[in-house]
Image 1: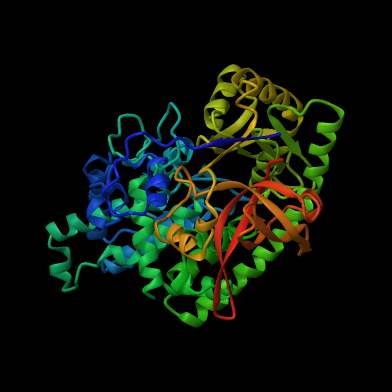
Image 2: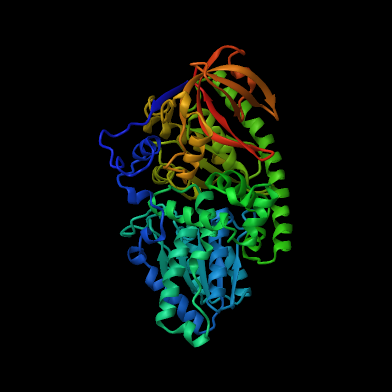
Length: 574
């Protein structure tokens, strides 16, 4: 049962004399905006780096290694945030006039996540002197120590929540470590290294590095396209700082000033570069980039983001597109099994409050997407497990959570109460990863369900959808859709405007597999509007001529050069 809730609008409107339309003012203030400066997305409003702990020391270590011509290896993560962060470091260090640098992204199927001890022999073969982790490392206690014992220096750059013990690294740059005073705790991994590179550049200028090499200091802002992509892809909270990074990056892309890899991904996806927005990043580009790390090797994605050869970029983008098609096929098969299990649980017994799913044939690279889909359908914290490999007794799990249930804190609680039940874990409030032995799965499933039951009330487990209320018929137009698009970016913790209302269903027909194309009519009979409902079968709507209460977003449908309003139906309420 879906419960509808409308966002509260404060009585005092701090944007009243801002010049913004009444609708945009309402959308902004209901999302916590208290001053016009918070939505003036200019680089001068970015938080300055001084309060980001470990930044100065990390930059000093990098510079000393540059001066000594020591080998630097960037150890990345196998998702889009990790790929963009790795690419950004490689591009920037090369632009600093230094080329003794390489990267290593552990294959998730052989090495797992982060700077694991198993990577150290490979790094030794690479003659590594300095390791810079990006988007990982805060939980790599053993791997960091093994690297130090082997004579390497280690800089950790990460944004994941730390455990009680920190790695023994030369420097740790992470806005979420205890005691850090940096105002934005929502930086993605690529955002963290952007700040580190800015500080490194500043110190290099002070040290007359560029002057001595007779090169111009690079403008790091030219790679904000890469920063924007990683920030959107990782679904971090879009606070003021992240919205600036994304907006500035998107501006560069729309103007054509973007790396060949992003151009190629947009071309492969048949998207107009001038109309790129955060939604295209999140739902079109990021899945293609992430697919490499889910099924194969993220090195393809990093190579794509670092090449300046347009033909090579197009070839690599095509590879990623092919991998993504394969990923979608695997996910569809897994989703079918998961749906049947959830349906069976709901019919036979009370649906668990905390859902754990496992199948011996599932693919560990796709379980995160599966957990997310099940979580969305059931409004329950969900963990999906897959075998680590065919020979191992270990299961890899990916967790997705709902509001009011901090999934990483829950795993900490389980580790405290049941030490040894999990082999390792890490993550954020809304997403986490873990591994357990297969013979402990049933115990874990029971403990997890009990923990969710004890932590959340019945009210918190209700599927509540927050909307921005109803729109008048006159507001259901192309201009308003364009205005909403213009005043983004919208995303995690700054949600894209969602409205609710009653519509007569004039026409409905299935398109694709389980999607519905609709013609809707407003209740005052003044307008007929095209709509599409992804993942909702026509049978779920009332019969033609009857009315449905729907939640929807305003979208723009472009066809043969014509732009028209289209509603994206998210939910059927009644």
